[in-house]
Length: 447
Ligand code: SF4
Image (cartoon, rainbow, N blue to C red):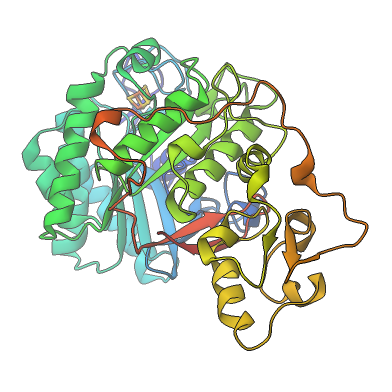
């Protein structure tokens, strides 16, 4: 059946291929999918040749543990009884045609594409039809059919809906390779502004905790859980978001966080909101997240302005460096790996290479350093080689006074439980994919 408005006017049955078109288009803006190759199709949406119907909705994605999957990203349904302020599919919105798959339909359709070699993974999400429990049952049944009727061995990323029962959470962990449950906002108050039907603690944090425990027990297939924040609509600050991110990492609920800028007109899911810098803000949040997970930074190291925003004019690591001018220049041939990773332009891989390679051949110039993979143009203002300036005429950036409104040393949530050297146990030793602005994916090892 197909519904042409949220008020559920039942009209003609529609062909499966058409449903697929509607429900893959609707799924397109969910960013909780490991490193979809945004560059290949020109931005955050579709990839490959859009004149080919199926190609429009297959996403090459780097998956945890390495390797690429061609993922069909699809909704079970774009019908929803909720009315989240940032979402185009809310019950009161006119988002065009609404429809849903039955589990048997979607499983059979997916297997057709799998057998023809066009896809080898699926990302399944949904609006809430009737109730979360009923909809989640349909989603879990779809994956069950894939696993047990069709013996599909490949990658499944399953979105968990808010407030579903423990039994369904257990089933989801048993069947899917990766699970995501979106917080969307950083606190009870912020979520209340944009999604009043959802209970932050009961519907989101509770199940997230439960999923984290089930995943750590290791009895199911699921390797990790992710979440997503919509950036902007609840008037949250960057600090509000990053405090919650820091907390859910410490509590081992979540393996990684995604951030989705809420911007007017850019996508159906993000209509009606923020302007201008929101994409840059999203990018800075990703940079902060990677500093936290892969560079050994902790929340109190991050720089904010007086309104608890991340400075947009510079990247967060350079902001940290400008606030720590006493730490520079860093000597490439003497510094520890941790000190090297604090230098703008030097990442975990280049820091590792520098420490390994300098044993045999100390670095003498910026030219030498290029081979390590570091971004020399950014690093050159912060380094020296065995006591010699990287450039004679160099104007060291770290000698600049940082803007007076910058501050750091913010307190994490639940500060009484942690020391200065707190860590994120769920990330430690794992490899994550960092998607650079240009669209390249680089695997990073988390410390
Ligand atoms: S975010 Fe999800 S629950 Fe909220 S209106 Fe959109 S589809 Fe429905």
